[in-house]
Image (cartoon, rainbow, N blue to C red; front, side, top):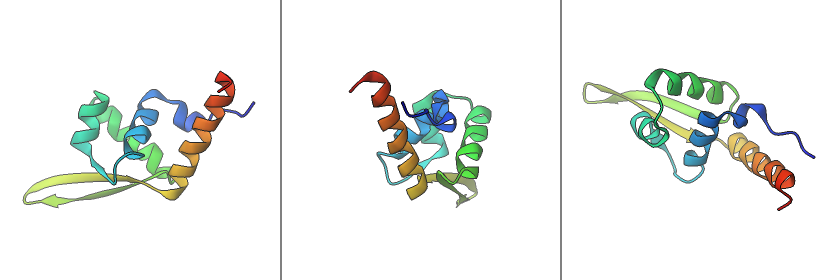
Length: 93
């Protein structure tokens, strides 16, 4: 059996990747609401996914407010698809 990617096996990182696989981009507030996580925990997990090259995080301003937008990369898409295939092998699907 294939080994499950430990970076994606974390509940919050997997949730973030699952969301980003289905949208072009998502901002921090949207991800925080959908994952029901704290801002601090989400920020740490986004940094880990970004450092791995799985997502791109763009920080900017809308008016005077900061806005953080995340997008999945091709490398992240491939890693997620491999994770799903490995999971299927455990479930005999």
